[in-house]
Amino acid sequence: MIRFDVITIFPEIFDSYFKESILSQAVKKRLIKINIHNLRDYAKGRHQTVDDRPFGGGIGMVLKVEPIFKTVAALKKKSKAKVILFTPRGKKFNQKMAHRFSKLDQLIMISGRYEGVDERVAKYIADEKVSIGDFVLMGGELPAMMVIETVSRLIPKVIGKPRLLKERVTKEKGFLEFPQYTRPEIFSPKGKIKWKVPEVLLSGHHKKIEEWRKKHTKIIEK
Ligand code: SAM
Image (cartoon, rainbow, N blue to C red):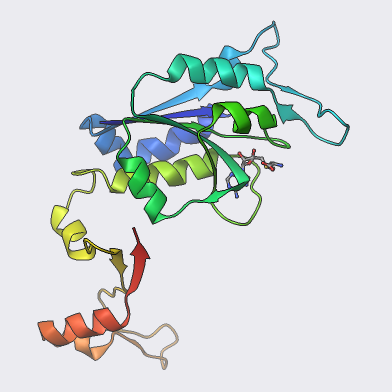
């Protein structure tokens, strides 16, 4: 069973998301474990300070190295554990990386905030720096949710329909993603306009349907 640990200063952000989704079922079935940790619990002092001003000047605050060091040290439990730091300067997250992470026993994720995280975290604590795209978010909480969801889909039995995964996965390459339609066959939003489902999908002709899907497939590489 893979265990996800997220380190954040805004743990409540995760509450409704993990409660609502298919992931809560996976947790109940003990296929995955998700633990959200408040960085402030590991900070010193009455005010539990987790951030400070940047050396060299500049606006904003930076998350301190010490509480992050303490949190990671307290959490690292499994032998096949990896620590990742979210930053837009990291290696871009993709399906291949998700496959690699799905083989781990434990994935510890550090979600930054404000102007980022003391660079010593990237240098000495994190095994990898991960970005979810070439844009800048306000925090690493959404990246953590994205990684947890993508990796969890790859854990056997998390998705309730094993046939679905089997149909969509090619051993060598990765996921086959193609367009899908459902009823009605014709949708007319403004009376005259007709938005139709491609005829071949209604034909019941399996070979032709397969060809159509192949033509419109994007392979999300492993
Ligand atoms: N200056 C920081 C840096 O270079 O890492 C970025 C600060 S950003 C405003 C605040 C936090 O959001 C980051 O520490 C990171 O955890 C998260 N973040 C923002 N954009 C991200 C992205 N594209 N991928 C992953 N994490 C991101």
